[in-house]
Image (tube, rainbow, N blue to C red):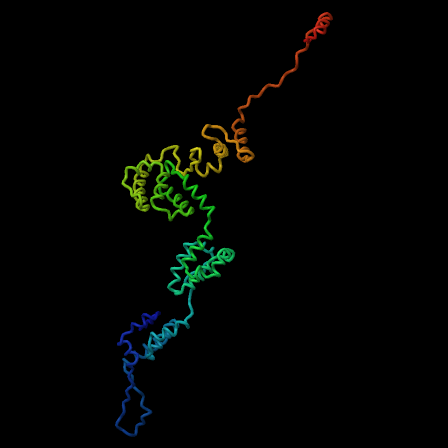
Length: 375
């Protein structure tokens, strides 16, 4: 007979009462005592039944199986046989059993960049745990890198405006101190000049547009203003906005309806035509639409753009005094030299001069007298 011992504690807890009785229901051996008083009792050997021999064999097999079982199983079974509480024994063994394998590997990558939104979420996470405003206030200060803490050190020493340790007030102060105003102005100018390409997908253009909107700090702008800015940036969809019944004060609903119309238009085969741009365009002051690659790689465009800025409405060049853009002039000269290369006419070299005609003495005297050339 083969006895299987469970390898986990949950299976051992499912032992029924009948199986527990088998461990304890081991009857004493029966001794056959004769009626004669001359026979010594110690000389009589006990007689074991077949049932007793089977139980002895089962116990021996169980003992061998327990020796090969895991340590956790041996301790738990020993507690069950001694009548101890399994819950108490499990709590006692929590610290004694060593962990087998690490559940998660150690993170060695770069840390996430912290910003105002990260601190806002961190406040909501730690507020129920830290309980006090002072603890959240200190946690925000510790999350700022050491070199950048000097900007809000005065605010930190005063513990807020009224010594209130208000974490919301501190987040507003951090936003004022660390907000990139120069980058926001550049993003705002870029946002106003963005135009959707003729064959550009609406979802691709919307991602770039909303990214510049976030950099410029325009997420808090009114929905009507954001809708008006985005509407003038569309290309083929601008004609559909006048026909559709779109809300003027709900930016998200306006985006959802435009996205449905754009998906239907982009699914057609004739949506992307040859020669139409699939990239985001930027309009300069002269009205030319160019993408980022053309602005950075083509010197002709850069030169024409810089020269167009110095031309008034009548077409005359505006004199700027001593403020001369040397880089634009150099690029313009290089562009002209490159465009005129190969178009110049090569003039032939002059050959040897013809000899002077032969003159008589009278002719030479006549030329000298009248101051004329003899040739």
